[in-house]
Each structure stands twice: as C-alpha cells, then as structure tokens.
Image (cartoon, rainbow, N blue to C red; front, side):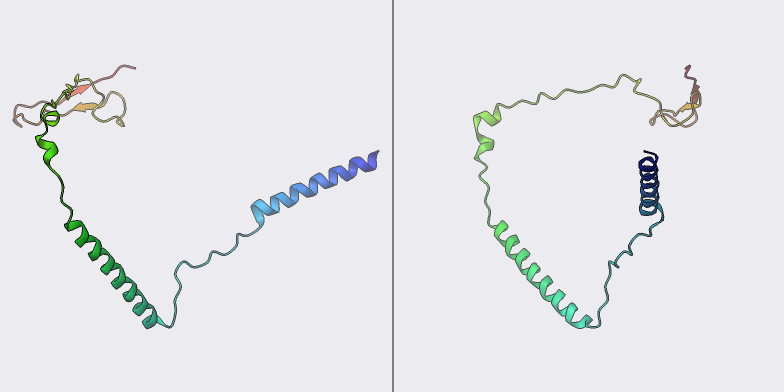
Amino acid sequence: MPTIKNIIIFIAIGTVFVLIYIFFIKPSPPVDNLISSSSNLSEQSAETLARNASATQDFLGLLLSVQNIKLDDTIFSDEAFIGLRDSSIVLIPDGNEGRPNPFAPLGTDVVAPPVGTASGSAETTETSILP
C-alpha cells in the first residue's frame, strides 16, 4: 500500500512541475512580423494602382446611378402628414442634478458663476456636503 501512495505523490508532484513549466517558464513563441518587405515593390505598386483604379470606377458608377434617383414628395402634401403634431416634452432640470465635479474630494465643490453674469458681481461659493 505505501508504494501506491508514493507513486501517486510522485505523479502529483511531477504534474505540478510540468504545469509550472508550461504556464510560467516556457517562453512564448515568436510573433510573426505584421509588415513584410519585398524586393519587387514596383510590381506591388502597379497591382495596387490597378486595384485602386478598379475601385474608383466602381464607386463612380455607383455615384452616377444614385444621381438618377427621384423621390416622390407627395407624402408631404397628404392629409395624414399635415395632421401630425409635435408632442415632444420639454424637460426642465430640477437644479440638483449632481456635483459640478464628481471626482473632487467631498467638501471642496466650488460652484461656478452662471455664464450670463458680469464678472465683477459674480461670487464663487463653496458648498460642503455632509456624509
């Protein structure tokens, strides 16, 4: 029985060493360069120019086909469209939305003067926030 126990202990210790090697000691494989250089740059640039010219021609053809689109604007004179009303809600802030600088330490908030006031009559007040 002690020999089986010893074998299991040695296998467990070996497994731990293998895992330590795999995750911590083994160097990572080298990363391939993202930029490759070649001696035939003139061939590549000619091929790139040909591809760009083809893409330019495709884009111009698409742009010219869009020019011929005519939109029907009779919907704007329809009674259903004319009967639409604006029902938007105007939101009025309460005035207590939060701190001027939420990252400032507590008790050091300085309230800036309103934008439309004269610079000589405006006062800065410090507000302290009790925890």
